[in-house]
Image 1 (cartoon, rainbow, N blue to C red):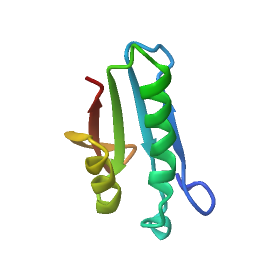
Image 2 (cartoon, rainbow, N blue to C red; image 1 turned 30 degrees about the vertical axis):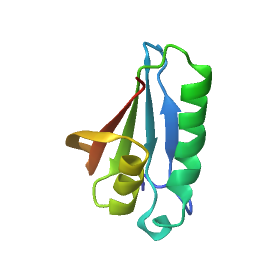
Image 3 (cartoon, rainbow, N blue to C red; image 1 turned 45 degrees about the horizontal axis):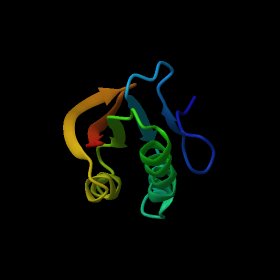
Image 4 (cartoon, rainbow, N blue to C red; image 1 turned 90 degrees about the horizontal axis):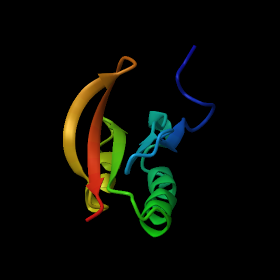
Length: 100
């Protein structure tokens, strides 16, 4: 079974035991790259996190390693690279946005 949702791909923002950090990830099918979906998903996460969670210290952002547009988007939003890894068989990068 493919890990891709029909047409676009999965995304999530969560931390079941909020400890000052949330995780954001979106995995778009390559056909959907560079169409603005990552920005559309990231914007409300940053807005909600920074404006309604006073104890938020960090947002971890995950991007498909080969998706350079998504990586650049997170960089422009203020995220910095902290790790490259393989998750569920797919190369990803993990970036952090620190709320200081």
